[in-house]
Length: 292
Image (tube, rainbow, N blue to C red; front, side, top):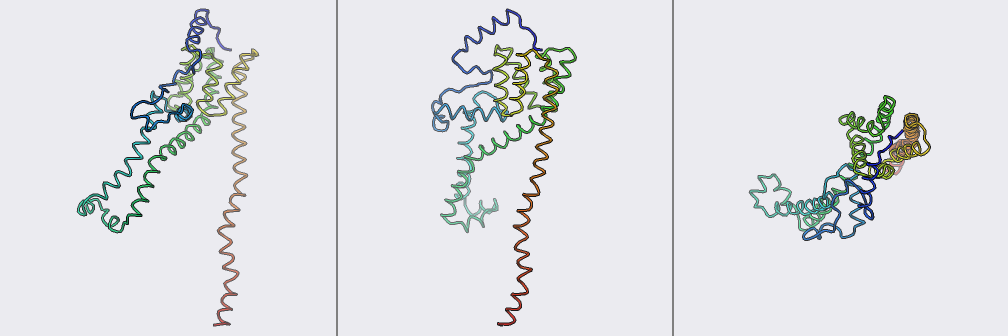
C-alpha cells in the first residue's frame, strides 16, 4: 500500500502544481521553445511536430536538454556533410584521387551519375537519423518488455520485506541499474517526478506514455486500482507479473505457429521454378530433338 503523505508534503505538492498549472508539468520536458536564428532553417516551427520528435527521443532514452533542436541540427549537418564530401572528392586532382583509391570510380562517373549519388547521399543523410531513432526505440522497448516481469518480482519482494512503495521503487531501480538500465531509468524518473510534486496518477501514466510500452500502462493501472480499492499491492504485482509471462508465452507460441505458413510461401516461391524445370526439361529436350 502506498505510504501516507504528511500535510507539509501535500501543501508543497499543491504549491508546485499550482505554479505549473496551464503547462505540461514534466520534469524532463527540456527546452521546447520556438527556434531562433539559424535553427529556424532546420527545426520545424510547428510545436506539434517538435513534440512528436520529443516523445520519440524520450522513448529512445534521449532525455537531455535541447534534444529536439540537437536532433534536427544533427540531421541537417549529416545531410549536408555527406554530399559535400562526395563533391570534394570529385574536385580533387587525379593524383589525390589515386591516393584515396577512388580514381577508377571517378573516371567512369558521368554527371548524371554524380547528380544521382549526391541526391542519394542527401536523402540518406537527412532520413538516416530517423531510421536510427526508430531502431533505437524498438530496441529500448524490447528491453523494457523483457526486464519488466523481473522488476515486478523484485518490487514485490521489496514490498513484502517491509519497504514502502516509493522506497521499493528506488531500491529496485538501484538493483537493476546494470542488469536492466532502461527500466531502472524509468523507475528513477518516476520517483524524481513524485519528489518534485507531481501527482502519482499523472506520474505513472506519463511513465507509460514516455516508454511507449503497453505493459507499463497496465502496470500503472494496476497500481492505481490497487490504491483506489485498498487491495494489496504485493498480490496485485504477483498476479500481474504472472499474467505478463503467460502473455509472453502465448505471443511466442503465436509466432511459432505462424512460421510454417510463412515458410510454405517462401518454399513455394523458390521450389516452383525448380519443379517446373525438372518436369518440363524432358519435354523440351524431345522437342529440340524432334525439330532440330
